[in-house]
Image (cartoon, rainbow, N blue to C red; front, side):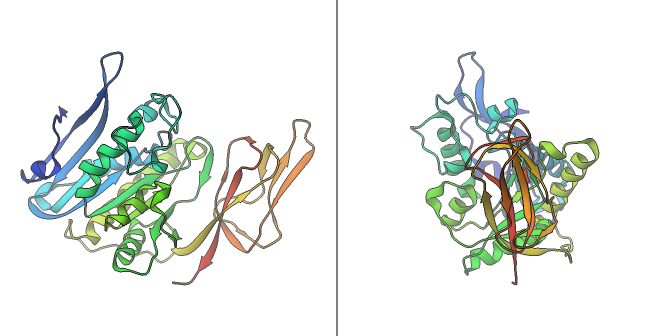
Length: 332
C-alpha cells in the first residue's frame, strides 16, 4: 500500500499494465491519523475507458466494498484496454463505524445527498468535493454501490438514468450488464438532490446505482453470494466497455420498474407481510404496525399492483417514515 500525496489520476494512468492501491490523505484528525480516501487501480496494458466503482458513501452498506476488492483481485492488467478504478469505502470513517453517516461532522451529513461536495464545508462535504473533482470527473462511466445497510432488506436492483438521450442509453446498457434482476428507471434528474449518479449525468458521465444486501442478509452464504454477484456484474460492465475483451453476458430474467417509496403514519413494531421479490395486488396488506402492547396502530396497503423491491427489516419503524419500496413493472 502507498500514500498518494498530490494524487493525479491522469498521471497515474500514464504508467500502464499494473495494479496499484493505497490511501489519498484528505485531512488530519486530532489523534494525528488521517481521514483518507482508499483507492485501487487496475491499469490496463492498452489505453481505453476509465470505469469507476465506489462503495460506502453510506458507511453501513459494505457489500460493495468487498465486491470492489474482489473485482480488483480478479483483473489482469496485461489483458485490459482501459482502467478499473475502485474506491472501496468513500466514507471511510462511517465504514469503520458501520454507520450511515460519519461522526466527524458536528451535524450528521449524508454524503450521497451532498454531491458535488464543498471544499469549504464539513469534512464529509470536503471528501465529496475531492472525490468529484479529482476522480469522478475523470471517469468515463461510474458504478455507485449501495445496499440495505443496517435497517433494510433489498432485492438486488440497479438504478439507471432514463432521460431519453445517449448518456441514458449507455446507463441502461450498464444496468443490464450488471446482471441484477430488477432494473429501476430514474425518470427525473434533479442534481440539486446531491445524489452521485445524477451529478455524474450532469457532467455527461453515464452512471448506475447498484443496490444489494444489508444487515438482514449477512449470513455467511448470502453474503458470499452478494459479493460474487457484485464482482461478476462489474466484470460484465467492463466487458460492455471493451476494457476486457470477452463476450458480454446477457440475462433473461430481468425486469424494469418505476419505484415508489411507501410511507406509514404511525410508528411501532413493523411486521412485513410481503417479502422481497413477491408480487402484491392493489389493496393487499404489505405491513402491519403494532404498538408495544401488540395492538395494531397502522397498516400499509399496496396502492398499485407491484413487485416488492425492499422493506424495513429493523423491528421498529418511525412515524411518517417509508417502510416499503414497491416497483411498478414497465415495458421498455
